[in-house]
Image 1 (spheres, helix red, strand yellow):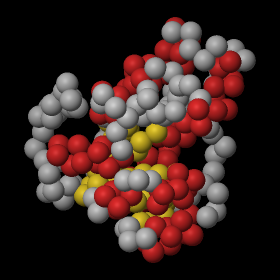
Image 2 (cartoon, helix red, strand yellow):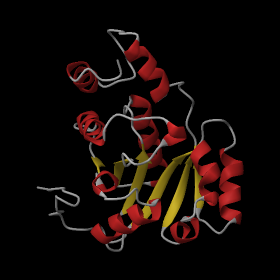
Image 3 (cartoon, one colour):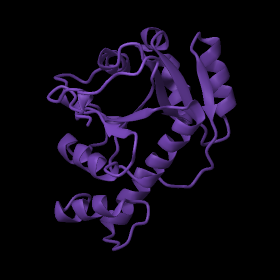
Length: 212
């Protein structure tokens, strides 16, 4: 049986040579079914054997907006992925004393899985700016980029990443209009049924009085 524990937890599992592992980093504020659908598309497209969802550090400020605490976002991720075979949660960035670069997260996971091939799963918009990241040069030598097409420009972003020296491929995904922002608005309005959320995540949010 596997025992997964990042930092406080340990892997007790035979590591498969050249295992393909996806890193899906994000705020997950909250995690919704659109996230899982995107991860499934990446897994199918690249033949990933595992996808690790990596909630962003509390120190990460997206556009200056506040997020729910890492403890809540981590708990919601675990609930949402509880029955998703091959999908796990990695709390590395939440447990780091500083907000780590994505390259540091990749290096950490590489240490857990020596010899594995790492794939960074990015939405089209995030991938477009990846080349501006201060860690891009280091990152491109350690991961392959999976660009999740959302706005029809996936091929252009893949071409730009490839031109910059990265290994990148496009992951086609039909847009579903699901976003964390829209989910938060529905929660704030007190809607009783939100199909974009796993039922266990919805119950957790209501029990903890989040997003009100």
